[in-house]
Image 1 (cartoon, one colour):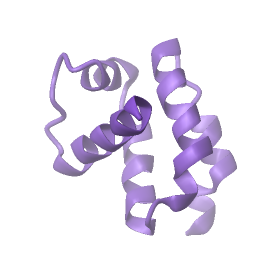
Image 2 (spheres, rainbow, N blue to C red):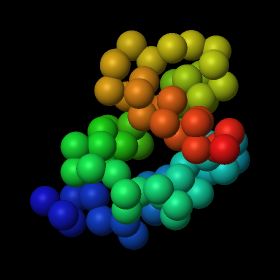
Image 3 (cartoon, rainbow, N blue to C red):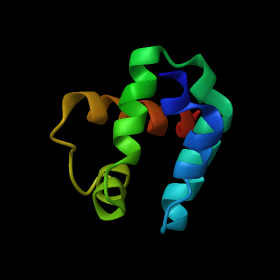
Length: 83
C-alpha cells in the first residue's frame, strides 16, 4: 500500500499540464505530504486523478468540488499557500 502513494510517485503525478497547478501541487508535496495522515494521502491521490480543468476550477474558486473529501483537500492546499 505504501508504494501506491510513495512520495516520489506522488511528486511525479503532480506534474500537470497547467503551470498554475504545478505551482500549487509540487510545493505542497515537498512541504506537507509527509505530515498527512494515511487517509489524507489517499484523498490526495484521488485528487491527483482528477482532470486538470476541474482542478483548475476548484483551486481558482470558479467551482466547488462536489466531493467533500476532495473539497477539504483543495482547501488544505490553498490554506498552506496563503500562509
